[in-house]
Amino acid sequence: MRPDGRFAPSPTGVLHLGNLRTALLAWLFARAQGARFLVRVEDLDRGRSRPEHEARQLADLAAIGLDWDGDVVRQSERAGLYDDALARLEGAGLLYPCWCTRAEIREAAGAPHGDLPEGAYPGTCLRLTGAERAAREAAGRPPALRVRAGSERVAFRDRLHGDQDGVVDDFVVRRNDGAIAYNLAVVVDDGAQGVGEVVRGDDLLSSTPRQLWLARELGLAQPAHAHVPLVLGEDGARLAKRHGAVTLADRAALGEDPAAVRARLAHSVGLADEGEQPSPEELVARFDPSTFRPPGSGPLPGL
Ligand code: GLU
Image (cartoon, rainbow, N blue to C red; front, top):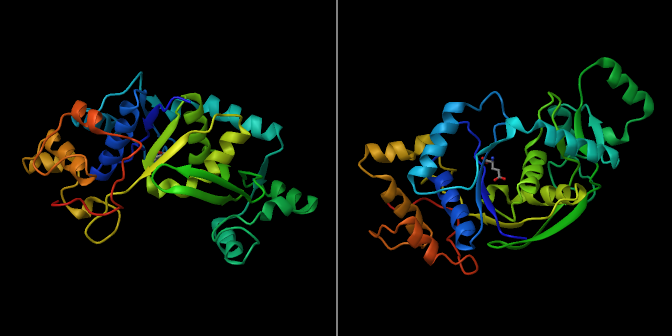
């Protein structure tokens, strides 16, 4: 499969330097392999997504020198694709309704359940008797939809993290408010868009077994993966506003232009020397996806 790549931001705020570094790396992985690079706006969270955040995010990506192929795709415009995928799973007998509240899941997930990792859904609603199910249906609270994954262990190889595996629990694919869950949307879109290599932050490493399971059950090609390190604040927490000048606008206010930010990001993963400002094309020329070994997650030097 061609290693077409993508960056898939959620338009819920301004991209910070960590997001921009992930985008730069996703772009480099694709471009250095002569592949397409796509941008997909993951705006399924209707409450928090804003068109002005989207516009700003796209402008910031362009400002650091990234380009993309074709039109930007928005998940809010693709409900039909997600519904088709749900119908397919339903047809294969792989969905079931779940009425559990968060508190119930927390309580049940605390107890050991065979092979399932901590916090995994223990399958409570799969085991309801006919009467219990009828009572929940009659009560009228809409259910979420979960997949019946049967605690399967799914293995994969990540370019940067090596051999990985995880047990897939019965995760939610449609929430009880009708919203399509991230895992379903991302798999359907990566499949439909022909994404061959998923490059994203390593906070999503543990989602990958679920997504590969879903891709397989939906008959979609399975992409390769490279989970890249996150930028952290000095306190070791994920980068956030409180860590100071962490957006392109913040850096501009300090006199650091987008080319200097790109250089800073490239330097932090060993792709540029201190003080050097390589162009995007120079970075593509020096980027080798098969030997790239970034340092682990940590603060940006000198920020
Ligand atoms: N939309 C997700 C985020 O902003 C990224 C999803 C992905 O790359 O799979 O964290």
